[in-house]
Structure formats: C-alpha cells, structure tokens
Image (tube, rainbow, N blue to C red; front, side, top):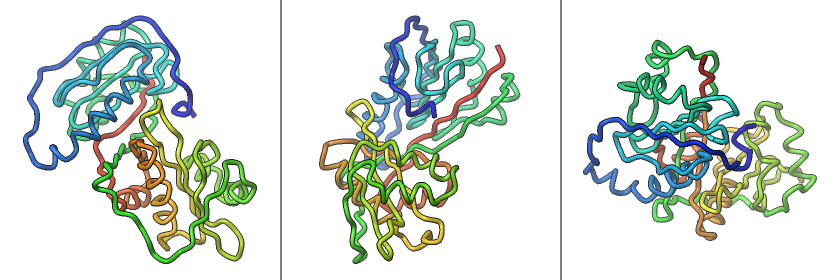
Length: 269
C-alpha cells in the first residue's frame, strides 16, 4: 500500500495558509505539544518537497508529485493538533483545494461531507486516526502472559498472518515490520503478534495482529505493549494509525492520544 513506500524527491513548491487562529492554552494541549511537534516534522518530511508542518489553525497546501502522504496522483491530507498539511499532485489544484478546505478543518480531521460538496471527489481512502505516545504517558500492560520475541520473517508469525482474513493481515502490515516481533502463544501456535516499522528515523509505526478466535482477551494489548516499550527504548515516537474502533481502544489503553487523522482523496482535475 502507498503508505509503505519510501520518500521520493520531487520538485515544485507552493504553500498556502489560512488565517492563524493562535495557539491553544489548555493543559491537555501542553501535554501533547511534544508529540504533535515530532509527528508534524515526520509528516512534513514525507511530503516530498521542502515544507514545514503548519501551526494550529493553519492549512498548508503544496504541490508534490512525490508525496507519500497519499497514493500517486491523489490529494493527501494529514491533520495534527488542529492544523493540516495537504499535498496535491499538480500546482493547478493548490488553489481549489485550499479554498475547498476553508471551514472544513476540525481539531482532529476534515469534514469530508462538506468538502465533497466543494470538490469533485471520486474516491476516498480513510480517514484513519493518528495517535501518538510520549514516554511519560505510557501505560504498560502486564497481565501474567508470557511474551516472546521472534525475528522478522519467523515462520510462526507467517502462520498467524496466513490464518487470518486477508484484509486483516493487510491492514496490520505485520509482515513488513523492521523490528523484532513480540508474540503470545496458545498451544504452541502464535495467536497474537506486534512489531513496528521505523519511519524516517523518527517514528515507530505499530503493527498488531491477533487471530480471530483469540480477540477480545487483551492479547493485542499485551504484545503491543512490548513493542511500544522497545520503540521508546530506541528513542522513537510510537505511532498508531487505525480505522477500527477496537484497534483505537487498544491504543488508548496504552496511553496513546489521538492527535489527528490522515485521509487521501482522488480529486477530479
């Protein structure tokens, strides 16, 4: 899938911003600033052109044929902390997309219904929530279950992936992790596993998968906790991107905060 691709250099830059509405002063925002800043730098680096993630209340739109915020030829929107970074495939879409986004940006995402009234949107991927974790907010999960670390590509992990629905396996991205894989076994078989991919040397993008008949027991949280602990030990920012509510609940239980969202649009030119 497109979000697993590597950053590709591209030329051409145009940045447009809306009115700055200022920074929030709430205590919760203060707690989140560290994660928002690191995540913003991460996503800006994936835009494919030199750009800075905008400040709270702003929208930055840039033309980038090499963006990995979205599939090639699509428009990618990443919202973090009430600000949005948007990449479009060609300069002619910068103005229309910026104008269409006016009034459609919320604290953690875009009003797609309203946006679709202003743009000819042919297809949508997402949205998926983006959640991040600072070390001092981590809530480890220790429930007396033995957790084992396996190497990437271990055949027992491959057996877990092969035994679940193809869509679930693809959604998890477990086969593409670059870390070790933390697993829980039942009767010798791996029934839950988690690992992460390192993005741009900044973030640890979590992948978690549990066999269907073993879901609802908290095993996903157990293996994810082990993977998160390792990522934090490596100085990485844990990132949890998810659409299903069940996955989002696991992230929140570990201390992740949902700070924004990611969505891709195929816009008619």
